[in-house]
Length: 187
Image (cartoon, rainbow, N blue to C red; front, side, top):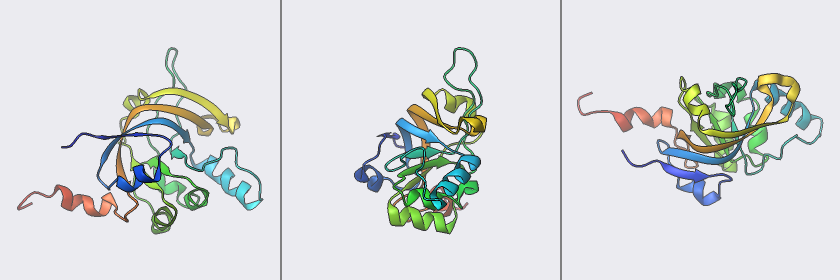
């Protein structure tokens, strides 16, 4: 197995074009959290012609609703949310320059098409590792929609956050090509 690729946010177009589905990465830098309720508000704001609380151009969204931090910790558990729940809203943000998303599970054909058209990559984080992933978050601050509680938008600073490229800029989908990547002779 090769060494993980280290990426610092914000991503450059070159960073993204070199990634391939199946690449292990370690992400460092700023990402924003957003789940279902925040995405619904984004869609409402866009439909009303109102500004979003964050300029998502060149940014990354982590689909997570972190639990409150215990004393002495930056954040509570912070495991990935099922990305398909954000599929109705994701193209709206991708069209506005979003460069990356982190979650778990497959993406819809319309989201994958939007990612290809506008240059966005989807990373998978391993479910069931929320406590471990939270250790890779070194700063956390609520920056919008505080009334949503755990679904408020947080600005996170990551350090060596482990993920895998699921959908790259070349149309590859790890859920489609993965089985053949790991197939053994005679399996």
